[in-house]
Image (cartoon, rainbow, N blue to C red; front, side, top):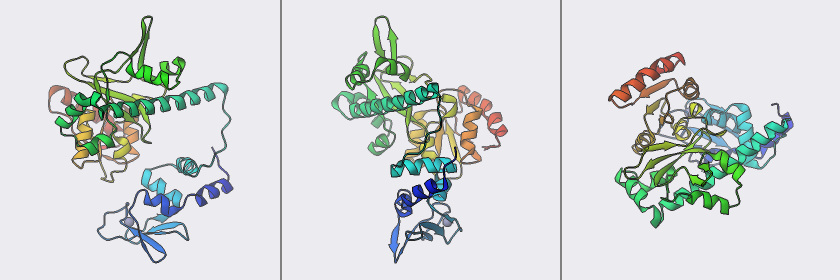
Length: 328
Ligand code: ZN
């Protein structure tokens, strides 16, 4: 997809670099220039400058510099077209659409609807967790040592112990069965429609752009299975995503920690290891290795030293090596 020079320039001019960088770096005004701690190298006193008049940034410490596009590409690891899309959306500028076949159009519109449904579901679960109805789930998470701040950061929630609580909620919001059916959140049977997740603490699974693409749930009490994940949908491809990557990609730690499950990732982030990620209840894939390689070449496996953990590590190591990642 090619965008015209004029369009690229318009998008650039309508995204003030001071505003955009402020979303990532705490800036302080000094004369006509803003200064902050450089996100691209470690430093104690600010040598990273942003000039609003010239719409550029420059670091006197490490020499990084450029415009609003290069900042996002460097910080978020976006490709240029990705940076264009993000900044266009931020400025409310509509990008010219590529010619799509009817089938592609349908698929994209279904994807957009499913993203909306997942977001509604995540908000609903989150709201329940914080209400009287979700007390059991909330107490469980607190007992596991999670702070309120962490619960909010990861958008944790609670699914009630009713067979169709979420289904009725989304139906009332006006979503149609033909769309809900594709969300992976429900089981359609001749006897009716049932929520897949009930009586569980809910973990929204986000892609690297912070969009909810699926859910994991941990049962309260003794039910089976203990952990349940959304099935694959057109949004949720388990082999291409990693839990926690949306935060870990910005951790600037120069490495990633791979752990076994959601709770490990969340507990590590809370303890300051903001580079922890986990695969989504499946064996490691080469696509996940490629995703990690966009951000770092250093990967640490932090699997349990029990039989299952060792087995998983032994399976993962050759794949990580093949992708050119160094493992420890
Ligand atoms: Zn720097």
